[in-house]
Length: 295
Length: 282
Image (cartoon, rainbow over all chains, first blue to last red; front, top):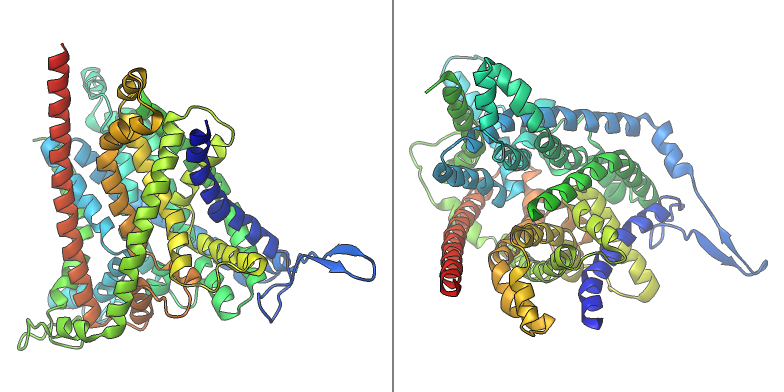
C-alpha cells in the first residue's frame, strides 16, 4: 500500500510543485506592486506591527493597464489573428499530406511518417533560422525568381506577416499531420465504396463521408498548432514585423526589458485565460484518444 | 491511377519539398565560401572554412557541452517520472487526485512555452525567498524546468504503449505470486522498453532544443547552445551557424534512423517470442 502511494505520489507532487503551483504564484504576483529591489515585486500580505494585523495590498492596476494601454489589446488580437491564419494554412497543407499517407501502401506509409517526423527531431530554432536565408531580400527565393526572370525587383518577404505564417506552418506541420493521420488511417474504406456504389462522386464522398469522420483529428491538429502559436516568441522575433509585435514578444520585453514582473504576470494570466477553453478541449480529446486505445 | 491518386501524390511531394528544402539549402550554403551567406561563391566553394571556425569557437562549444549535460539529465529524470505517471494513469485505477494528475500531464503539451518559462522563474524566485533554495539560477533550475515540461511527452508515449496491450501478462505474474515490484521489473518494464527509449530520445531532443524556457530559468554562466544560437541569429544569418545546423541535422538523422530500425527489430523479436510462447503453451 505504501509502495503504491509512493509511485502515485512522486510524479503527482513533482507536477504539483513545479507545474501547478507556479501558476498560482504568477496569479499572486499579477496583483502585486512593482518594486525596484529584489525580488522585483512587493509582498501581497505584510505584517503591520502597530495594528498587529496582516494587511493585504492588492494592486489591480496591472490588469487595468492591459485594457487602458492599446498596445496590449492590439498585440493580443494580432497574435490570435496570426495563430488562426497559420492554423488554417497548416490544415490546408497538412490535410492532403495526412490523407495521402493514410492511403499509401503500409510499407511506404512508415517511411513517409518518418520523413514527416524527422525535421521535428532537428532543432526548431535552426529550422526557423533556415527561413531567414530563404526569405531575405538577397535570399535564395528572390535570387531564384530573379534568375528565372519572373521578377525584376526582389520581393519583401522577410519581416512580414507572410514570413511568420510560413514559419509557424513549417514548424508546426508535424503536429497537424500526426493526429490527422492517426484518424484517417482508422477509417473504414468500405464506407467510401458504399458511397460510390450509391452514385456519389469522389469529391462528394470526401466532403460527406471522409471529412466529417475526420473532424476529431482536425480539431486536435488545429488545437496543437493554435494554442502554442498564440504565445509564439521565437518565430516572430526572427521572421516577424518590427512594427507589430506578438504577445509573446511583449511579455518577454516586459519581463526582461522593463523588468516589470507584475505586469508581465498579468499578461501571462490574461493569455492563459484566453487559451483556457482550447486547452480544456485538447485535454478532453487526449483523454478520449487514450480510452479508445485501451479497447 | 485516377485523378485523385495524382492529386494525393502531388500534395505529398510538395509537402515534403516544403519540409526539406529549407534544411537542404542551409546545408548547401554551409559549404559556401562567401560571407554573403546566400550568394554562392562558385570560385572558392565548396569549402570547410566555416566548420573549422565553428570548432575554434570556444563559446559555442562550451554552450554545447552545457546543453548536452542538461539534456541527458533531463531525459533520464523525465523518463523516470513520466514512466511512473504513465503507469499510474493506465494501471492504477481510480484514486484521489487522478484527474489532477491527468490534467497536469496533458497541459504542458500545448501550454505556450513563454507562460511556463515565467511561471517556473517566479517559482524559483519565490522558493529562494521562502526557503533559500535553489540558490540562484543555473543548470539545476534548467534541468528541473525541462524535466517538468518533457515528462508530459514521456507520459503520453508510455500511456499509449501501455494502453496498446492488456494487463493479462502482469496479472498472470501476480497470480503466480510475484510481488508488484517484481512484476514491474520482470514483465512491464521489458514490454515498454521501446517506449522508454523513444521517450528518452524525445525528452533529450526537446531539452536540447529549448530556448524559451531556458532563457527564463538560466543564470549567469549557464547559457545553453540554443540560447547562444538565438542571440547570434537575431543579429542575422552567419555561415558558421549553417555549418552547426548541418552537423546537428546529420547527427539527428543518423540517430533517428538507427533507433527506428533497432526498435523495429526488437519489436519483431518480441512478437516472434510471444508467438512461440503461445504455440508452446497451446
